[in-house]
Length: 450
Image (tube, rainbow, N blue to C red; front, side, top):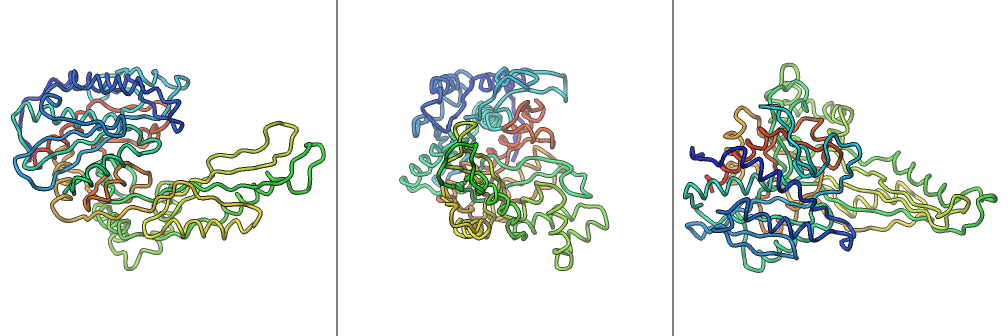
């Protein structure tokens, strides 16, 4: 439910997010390069921005810099977990309209923007959660059962902060009734024939894995190359893999999403999207061609992201390596993906090594109380929005929580245009201020029902 209540001034809420965006909590794959003093500064800054949270909710540090807060409820039922992460990917000033850690405000009214790394991913969610809790505490609200706030410090790299929190909760016998993390958003223009805004809630996420393709062979001077160098053999393997995409298919969640959104489409598209017993093969072809995003919904994807070869311009590579990022579709597996790559490459001189494999997550239900709480909160903060499940294609900290909860949902309560979604992990990341304030309302409404 939603309780009309005195908020902190909107400007105060915006200033709190600005303060957090200005702290460059950049996580690095090589953690020895991480500036941990910025993470310490971030943690030290929180009590001044959200005083009631820190007066009333004890918190503990986990795995060094991840944070776990407990808001004690009236009862002893299963708690809810509200999640976010506060680390961000690197950002250089070059190419940004405003410096990435300046949290600059531009424009006025509904068009006012906040620029900065982390506004969308994912300090906006963390600040909105804390702001919602702060204002609920000011009202004297007490949740029915415990509410846990879980804020990871290295989601963008190792993700072991969130994993350590799950280990801790599991050791205490805690199985949350609801877990809410970043994921889908409120979007428009992604579905043919549908003009209504759509709130997409991730009920599952693809698996993720890194493969390396390696060719080792004798080097030598580049002036006398053999017919097939290590780099040529590797290039042939990459081309062979690219020519053999994974099989496309709709998962049960894909089909539910199509039916849900399609019911709001204009005719004749409404018929096509709701009579799937007849149109599914045609729609599968449409999704493969419509956009890269819809194509990725239908299959395991593979992308070569890094290449390495010789250390000198005039020396043949003794080792050539390609890194392949694999996102494994629901219904498939790590083993199936590896076998597909081996069959596609089909060269015994190309070694295939598996790194950091993670299976696709279980699928959370789209009925029951936890799902309805998410729907109700969205319908309060974003009235008139179509709410649908989907499979999240990126990885999140939420995947760790599927070990201890059956109801794990991935939703960022912010409107994001196609252009704005394109700034995630890229230059000019930004958020409309009005969008941020509606995000706070989503969490206030969700908290009010817990």
